[in-house]
Amino acid sequence: MENSRIKNFPISFFAVVMGLTGLAIAYMRASFLGESIKLVGVGFTYLSTLIFCLFLVIYLTKTVKYWNQVKAEFHHSVKSNFFPTIAISLLLLSIAYDSINQNVSYSMWLIGTILHFVFLIRILTYWINKDFKIEMINPAWFIPVVGTIIVPIQGMSYSIELSWFFFSIGFIFWICLFTIVFYRFIFHNPLPDRLYPTFFILIAPPAVGFISYTKIVGSIDTLSNLLFYFALFLCIVLFALIKKFLRLKFYISWWAYTFPLDAITIAVALRYHLTGIFFYKFLTFLALILTTFVIGVVSIRTIYAISKREICVEES
Image (cartoon, rainbow, N blue to C red; front, side):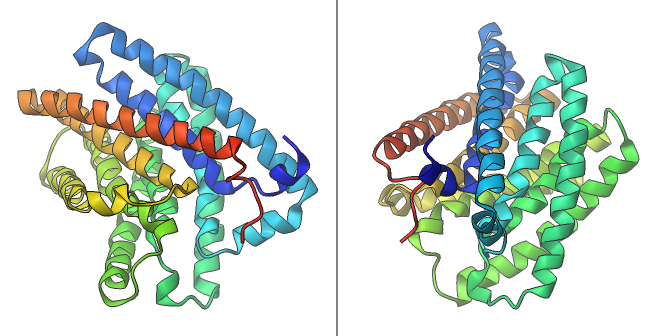
């Protein structure tokens, strides 16, 4: 990759890894649909690992050669929230590798957890010290929160106390941020088209929260029901806005569609595992098809945009 494109390589590209790894996990969790389904998930896991390593090398190169650009991204009201996607990618890969190689899974979980905690503290102190205006707030602010809720999914195999610690942080901050973000949607200017796909990020905290909380308590209870059905309701609301999403020009932010769809697919599959209700099996099938289709379209559009030099270029 030529130097100018490395210089403009966005941190938000790690959302690609999140989307693909989430899809890998979704296929693994939906293995009850067919024996070959899990093999597809394993294939996506290896692909996600390869892409993560490639992106990590590129971004480390950018950090060394173009530190001022990295620093500018970290102090940007939107882009700064994508730095935890590096750690979240590791946490998701640790879940995907659980049934492939547990040593690799543990190593990724440990590194991802430590790295995410560092990013979380740094971003929270940045939020506190920065003079933000309400118009600057957008759903991307949920990304650091989602990471803390992901930790217990694999973390319950290693530390119950640490899992509760991270889940508690993510759950409380999700409630706080959801209130602020929803207030911003209703009483202030609409999101610009570039950020409109980030509406889908709203699905991720309750969907991942359902998965994580169920992993902690081991069964379905009142809170898990609240999280699951609220995530489903948000999906219905966003489906009602489908005409707006279909009219949007392509931006790298289209990848915001992917991981939230992965999360709700995994949540529905887990719901079927726990209840045995056929409706959730059917819903898992539909959600997996839809999510695969969306990720396929976004992937093709991203590759096309890269070939046409619409991405990794100086912002106007």
